[in-house]
Length: 315
Image 1 (cartoon, helix red, strand yellow):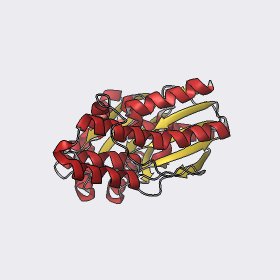
Image 2 (image 1 turned 45 degrees about the vertical axis):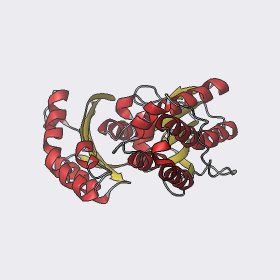
Image 3 (image 1 turned 60 degrees about the horizontal axis):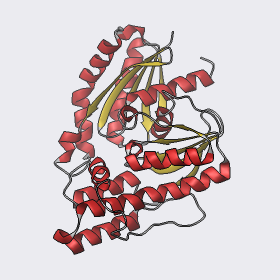
Image 4 (image 1 turned 120 degrees about the horizontal axis):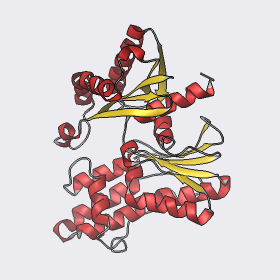
């Protein structure tokens, strides 16, 4: 019975998950949102220092909740890339120290691949699969023709969708992170009141959010107190989500997957989840959407990815 201890520390969360025989037993996350909110975004140096401060109680809590002694762990894994270099180093040191102490293997995992496989935890993938990664640092479309076969079809040329949400939220005075606040207010407004640009309307699968960000900031500064917040949030969200959805629909038509999925923090967005479900229904294909607990950065997604690599290697 394989026991995996997985660490995710790529940004401002330090998370430890334990998987036993392919099942997640615990997924402890130390969030730093309250510390970074006062600065309007993640401060890399602060994130690293807080990881050092918090990792012990996260590890201890994970082992306690899983009800196993650390000596029974068979494999340790961690997020090696991409992410904030300081945060990644802390996770690597913790993981390698545990593995050295236990004399077990220590496996490097990819953060984006982990997000994709978060949707595989509760509903197993069928291939070929198309995955839309939407987060604070990434906006990408991946094709998986089989297990762990990641083919990047398109990526953002500038801002990621989550980054765009956070910058607009900050301009509106919502603080950090602000995506959930915009999503909530968007449901109360009229999406056709403010006209905002839809970028990268070409034949590629690439994205751009710099134009939407700039146009939105200019509109906010121009109208100031005359801006209807609900209508603006609705208009902004319409374009932000459509930017991804129109490219994803094109990919579905071209590659004809058996299943589609979304991944990353923005996969918690209500409009995006609805749009993806509509694409699945319209094309009569299956869909796998991660639960809200697995949308943000978390150790469970790294444990799931680790388990998939072990199965692929026949271990």
